[in-house]
Length: 195
Ligand code: MN
Image 1: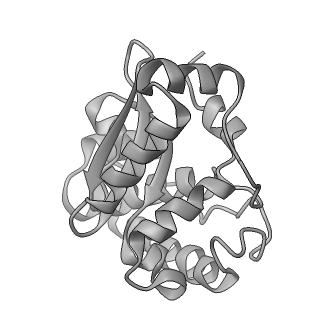
Image 2: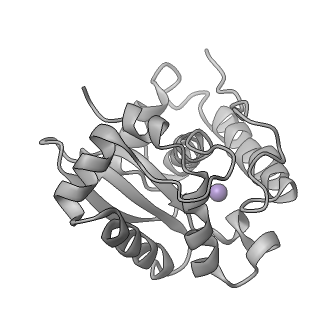
C-alpha cells in the first residue's frame, strides 16, 4: 500500500515574511501538516481505502480518516498557492476577468472573502471555488471540509485555524487575512481552473 508523504514547500521558509514568518511556516508545515500525514498513514491500513487517491478519500471517508485526509488536501492547496510578497498583488488575464464577472471587482471580491474568513466561527477555511459552470463562489468550510465534497473545484483558500496565524498575529485574524493578498500566486490559482 502507498503512504502519503509530507509535501515539500515550493519556497524557502522565510520567503513569505513578513506576511507569514518562518517560525509559523515551520510549525504549520513541519508539525501540523506532518501530523495529519502521519495520522492518515496510521489510520488507512485495514480501512478498505488504501488504494484511493487523496481526493477520493476526502469525498468517501468519514470520521478521522476524512478529517486527516481533508486537512492534507487543504494544506497542499494552501501552501502551494503562495509566493514572495508583492505590493499591489492582483490577478490578471482569465482569473481577473472571472473575478470581475462574478464579484463586480477585485476589491469587492477581497472584501467578501475576508469577511467570510473573519466571521467563520471556530476553525476552518474560506474558499474561492468554481462551480460546474465555471462560476466563482466563496464558501466557508468548517474544520477539515473541502469544497470538492460539494462538487466544486477549489481555487484559493485561506486557513483560519488559529495555528495558521497565532504566532504572528495572535487574535488579529482579520489583519492576517488582509495581509495574505500580498503573497497569493495568482498564476497558480488560475491554473486550478478547469480548462
Ligand atoms: Mn492549517
